[in-house]
Every structure is written in structure tokens, then in C-alpha cells.
Amino acid sequence: MDTRPALHFDDVSFTYDGTTFVLDGITFSINKGSTVGILGGNGSGKSTFAKLCNALLVPDQGCVTVFGRHTEDTTATYDIRSDAGMVFQNPDDQLIASLIENDVAFGPENLGVPTNQLRERVTEALASVGLQGFERTETAALSGGQKQRVAIAGVLAMQPKILILDEASAMLDPQGRRDLLDICRDLHQQGMTIIMITHFMEETLDFDQDIVLDKGSIALSGTPQDVLTQIDRLHELNLEPPFACKLSDALQQRGVPVHLHSTDAGLITDLKKLYTDSAQDALATSANPSMSKEELQ
Ligand SMILES: Nc1ncnc2c1ncn2[C@@H]1O[C@H](COP(=O)(O)OP(=O)(O)O)[C@@H](O)[C@H]1O
Ligand SMILES: [Mg+2]
Image (cartoon, rainbow, N blue to C red; front, side, top):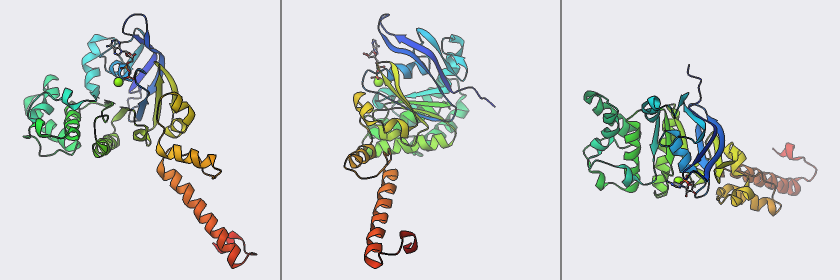
């Protein structure tokens, strides 16, 4: 079994102009099959990080490995780019052909996949993003969300092991964003490693790990519950905490005994319990003040 991390950054620094480090001494590992959110304000280094993941950029200091292969090793570039597929923000920048099937086939064709296997790859990739039967549709006729799904299908047709989405939901409407998350969930269940770079903290709530970048360094790292409930710190980092965090924090400050939650479901459970407890207390007092709450249940 391959136990190497899907991605490993070892003390990685990067500068575009030779003087200012836009990533500065970053170290972390992403396990195969995990889901990781990369968060951070504008200019914090997220896109630079993404480009370092698949050898579009190479570090000035330290090293990046993808399944153990160094991105600086040019003989490994082909394998690294096949393993780590990237989806960017604007679907219009990523679609190349006017017909969907040609667009999705473009990547695998360039990788040298034999023609007789291309059709199968295209059909499978389109099915993965819920666009089965769209092979002969013009890309220009699609909505932004559908275009982004075609862009993902184009990456999936190359059968990557890691999918890196660099603010891929930023231009989508709420439904398009939900669809994108559903696709990522399905792909993760099939074993894909998902790295989601996003401004929308809610998108990473059920992920394994969140990493927050600030001025090229890791400011916070941990489970979404650990990271997303650090409200003051998130505000300092120019990030908007999830709705449930803000509401549970506001309730706590008003003396309501709830935990600080990152998810709506967690907060609802707390509120329901509080409501049930207080209803039972009221009932106990009015029915028989001498009965305990346990006796009433
Ligand atoms: N091609 C480039 N040349 C010079 N500086 C760049 C380039 N791309 C990004 N930068 C700078 O690097 C820093 C990090 O940018 P980026 O990785 O795009 O951040 P983010 O994706 O978090 O907004 C910013 O200060 C940005 O201006
Ligand atoms: Mg960016």
C-alpha cells in the first residue's frame, strides 16, 4: 500500500521577485484520500500554494513532493501534473473547445490516452459531474455552474488522484456552489484527495483539515471545528466565520449556555436540548414541584 502523503510541503518558501517571500517556511502534509480546506484573505498566498502543488511553480527554498515525487525533478512533472489536477476560478478561462466532448477529451488526449479510450473517459467524467448525455452540447450554451462542471470533468478525465480547486466556487451562484460541493463529496467518497481553496468557510465544514494562510505563513491549522470557531482570530485574518459560529458566540455573550459551534446542526442540537430542558423544568414546576426531571422523562 502507498503510505506516502499525497502532498508534502517541507519548509517551503517562494518569491516572485527575488526579495519578497509570498510563502515563507511552510510545512505540512496532506494524507491520501483526505479533504483539506485552504483559507486566507486576498494575497495571503493561496494561489501560489496551489501552483506549487503541481509544479506550475517550484519552491525557492524547501521542497514539495506529490506522492513522494519532488516537483523540482523535471522528469516527474508529467506524473505530478497527472496526479494533481487543478480547477481555477473562472470557467471561461478553462474551456478550450466549443463542444463539450472535445473540451473534456483535450486533457487526456494531451496525456497520450489512446483514441479508443477517450470516449469512455469523457462519458465517465461527465457522469461524475452530473452532465451525462451533454457530449454534443456547445460549451457556450452552458450556465457558469455547468461550465465549471465541464472544467472539472476535463480534469477528471485525466484521472487525477488529487483535485485542487482554487476558488472554483467564487463565481458560482449558491446552487452552483452546492452542486460543486456535492461533486467534491462524491469524488472524496471514491478515494480522491480534495484540496479546496476558498473564501467561503462554510464550504469546508465537513472537511478533515483546514489550513489558514496569512502573509505566506500558516496562521491556523486543525479540524474545521477547531479553526472555524476562533472568531476573533478569523476576523483579524480578514475571514468571515461561519453563521453558526457567529450566532453561538452572540448567544454565549448574552448568557445562553450553548457551545461554540461551526455547524448549524451542532448549534440546533444545543438549542433543542436547552428548549427541551426548560420546557421540562416548567412542566415539573407546574405539575408536581416535588418530582425530579428524571421522573418526568
Ligand atoms: N505572478 C506574480 N508576480 C508577482 N507577484 C505575484 C504574482 N502572483 C501573485 N503575486 C503576489 O504574491 C502574493 C500572493 O498572491 P496569491 O498567491 O495570488 O494570493 P491569494 O491567492 O491568496 O490571493 C500577493 O502579494 C501577490 O500580489
Ligand atoms: Mg488566489
